[in-house]
Image (tube, rainbow, N blue to C red; front, side):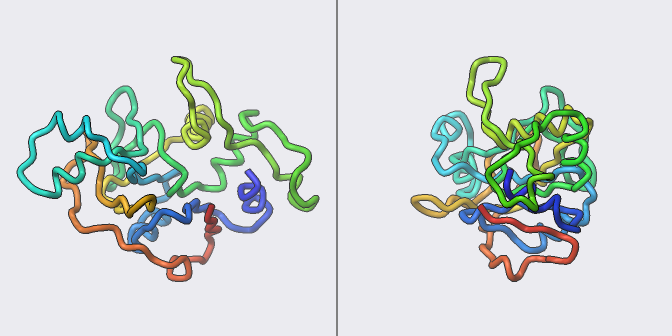
Length: 212
């Protein structure tokens, strides 16, 4: 929320969230920045293995087995979403890698979906300080993380969330979790590991990039 306020106080049009433990390819970032989609995420793996996924599948290559062990951070829509320019419309995605257009945050504010906050940051940012990201409890009683909760607000504001199934975004934990988690609507998964680049190598013009 603090970083969102700093972004809204700036002149930038696009806000890129990249966690410090996520690695990404520069070409993917450029593609997502140019896509014009309201919100773009990647189905990067969680930092643990999904052994149930391995047990339920049949595999002919080492890459297929490795990907089956990875548990992704994206949730599909209840019904198959749109597919445009290689991007798939989804319900939720993680903030470890998320590209957000300014108009989306402004629409969430206009719809009253992000309550105003009044303290906790320097005064110059207070006019832009809103609770975009917050933990919640889903209707079925399960924990609703701040990133999925944000995606829910995006959709309630009339916008959509899109995932690039071929974007290779790694996730560092006890070791580097890298690959494309199995996902029923995604095909032709790439096999090379995700490169980790320095933020200095990422595009900057017109973009506000934050690391958390």
